[in-house]
Image (cartoon, rainbow, N blue to C red; front, side):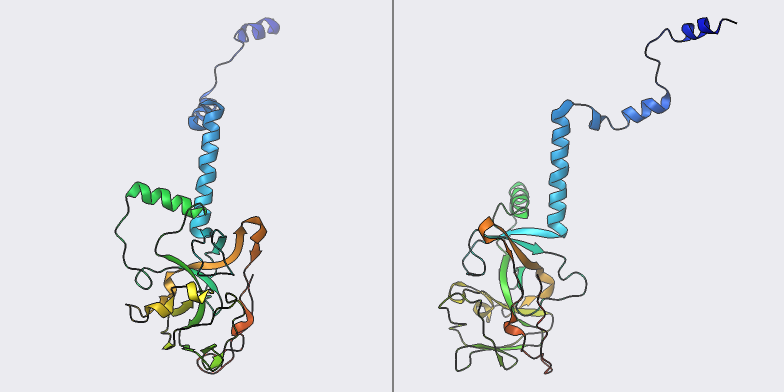
Length: 261
């Protein structure tokens, strides 16, 4: 039997017909293999943008500081990284935390709906820190939590929480803790918040007579500002200060001075 001849006869075609399995593998995802390098580059860029937006939506979101209300801790143009997981697993905002929150219903009125395209573009830009946040989003420091009595001020001009005077060394140089006297008890599930630049901050003090009484619902907190990520000469972590370490809980037990960062 002339086996060489038979093999030669079978191999006349230089490119054998692909079988069904090979055809299905190559044609299953044509959008990945076709279109040339520009198409693949575009798909890769879209995948990267999607990952960034998902990360921003659920884990860490850059937040552009638009005002002077938190100076000198945060300055205009700083990009802070907001930890959205900080309070997702049983922890709650504590005195001294710098938080970003949705002030709708407490700090801001309901705004008319934006044009859908404008809203989408603004949301995408603010999600990566390239645009100012929504008008109803604020960044402030937590001074009182549910059950706390917060008063202004003692004989030395200091704010008191549950009867304990607080030395706020993070305040803007030369600023008084408050020029507006107040005496409030924070409802459970709410927060009393103030800016570090007290004379330039519109905060809980300014909304005592408004709906909500200036208190921010805990569920409206977007996350905790844990880092300054930009500009480079400002990069650092934000720690919970020791100012509130000796403040007793409403029942009389001293608060924990544990820091984060």
